[in-house]
Length: 226
Image 1 (cartoon, rainbow, N blue to C red):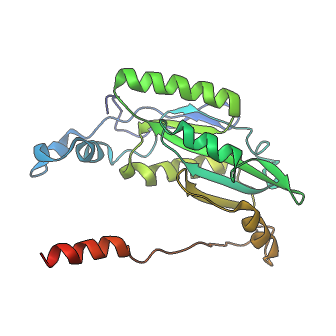
Image 2 (image 1 turned 45 degrees about the horizontal axis):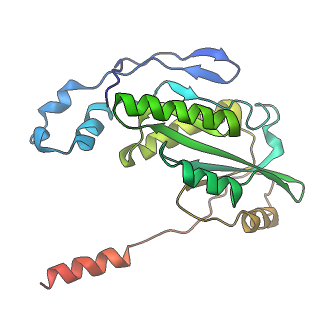
């Protein structure tokens, strides 16, 4: 991660309605004092350097995705999809299939992709430019200036929740997913509409809990028997 960040938290500045720009967050140099730090992979080192950071500058925003803070109640289901900047092909497939924005049975389905940055300085600038062009066409990408990696998935979720609180807080239901899955949004809408609290006035958590990975466990057993 080549960006330099300030350590002290700063109040965001408002550039337009619902758009906030945070100051930079410096990396914590004391992380290098961790035993065995120099032998850790680069992405682990980056995680330790920046794990204290909670706010990052926003590069791409779609403040009107839900029609504005006061009209977001018109959104019945907001599809929130985590996606790396390099996964253009996946995003295109989703836009044309289950994540297509539409009015279904009188209820709006909206879509947003969550992304960070990746690559070296040159690659990062190139990908950011391509992402800007993509967002100009589709108006569906939120991007922040942090390293888009597995270790930062929680950070991506936190940043989205801050954005949602300012721009889409009245959306009735939210689907959280990744760009490498298939979801049946028709069934989701039918299921949500069948609930007693379909107006979203009470909390509802629905999904499938993966308790263990059978393939991984079998591999571990196989290795143990060798």
